[in-house]
Amino acid sequence: MKRLLIIASALTLAAGASSALAADQTKPAASSQCFRMSQIKNHTKGDNQTLYLSVRSKDVYRLGMSGNCLAGANSSDPLVMKTVGGTDIICRPLDLDLKIKMGPGGLSPCIIKDITKLTPEQIAALPPKVKP
Image (cartoon, rainbow, N blue to C red; front, side):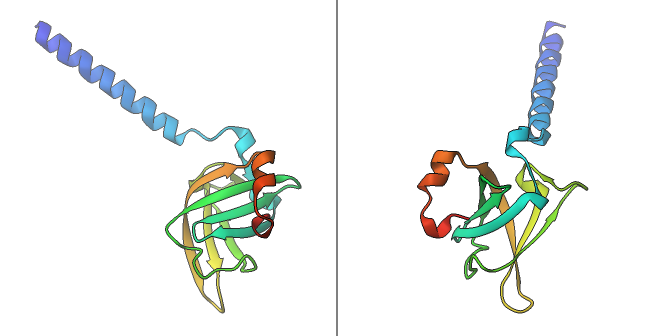
């Protein structure tokens, strides 16, 4: 009987930890990290896996890509963006469907790994050619 009670307790604890972890992954980021797609003013390519977005008048966000979707792209190539979930608010990588238009009819899809709002110090430290 004690053994059954111990097993049941362990299963309950494991289930609670699992649901807490799942809830944490679906929880939106802090609102200070969020921005609206309509607030994006400009973009520049940092390297084959990094895109910088100028948002509002003073904020810069770094988008880290999974893979080299930016290979062959220029900062002047247009972005094709669509928000996911029925709102234009972007807080997490899954909130944005991003493609780079390269050449006539060519779209390079990107999988966004992370979105980071840069601090004023980080923005100041960016090389001039990648500042959006």
